[in-house]
Length: 368
Image (cartoon, rainbow, N blue to C red; front, side, top):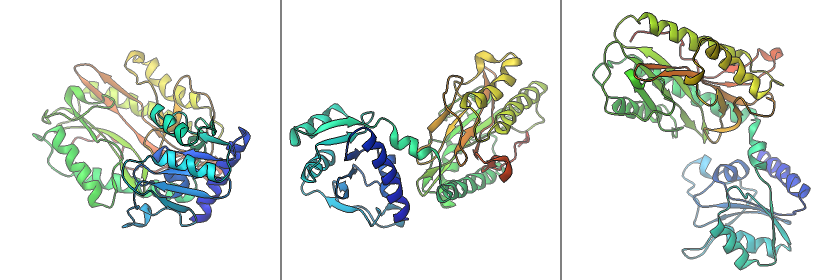
């Protein structure tokens, strides 16, 4: 993997050279991990003129392979307590005769900026905006493999829950059980706080589980994901509890399913982000649910659960191959509940079979 990380750093160095900077300071944890192989707490990465250095406040925890930094990097462990790795990295940049330093201005705090200026007052700071985030959009096959395994773990945890008795249990208890099952099956942990929503809460985006108990006839919507070797996936499904679904539940479910299928089928290299959103949104909008729709149809996933691209009506840009995204339309009706269907897929060209579905739990409307 050292060669992979070295290539990534070379690509970032080319971005920095384009803005006239021979050195760069990477401070956002997910970006540090992407470029260095690991991101010990508080660590920053210096792409220097003569060598690259991972600056850590303390010795990295190397109890698992995925927590060990790239061996080709020089590791600089700070002495003492209370120092700032970013300021130390700036000092090291000056020692390498750098006169400018590209920084992630969207992540660099005012306090850190002042500390850097105090140790290196002559160092000119330049911005690299979201350069690393843009490098992270297209995944290599090793990254996609991690997402695929995470999706398998997620499907397994969800499938086991569906085989258990659900009536009478609280949303909070079901969410905790799902997160335990993720870890039991090999996940690093949940990719984000697991959402379990029942009855009038079902289908609500970002719902935090409550002590409401599952009742017969409820919609039950679940959204969860596993983190595997740092990579995060997502799945969302909606079910009916105990009895055959009511007519309105079938109608709403079929509508959201059609919207989600339209979004999935539009995933192809060269498709505009906004067109993917439009494909799913149009189905729901045409049925009169414009005001009940979420702000986006999907988003990228990877080292963070919410990455670029953003599939929204105003999004600019086009999809590339090997970009993992979610497609997650839904409708929530206040006081009644709703439906959310969410998959993680990888954009693939038609010659390779089209979009690769990573989350394969059935999308049939089951009565549990």
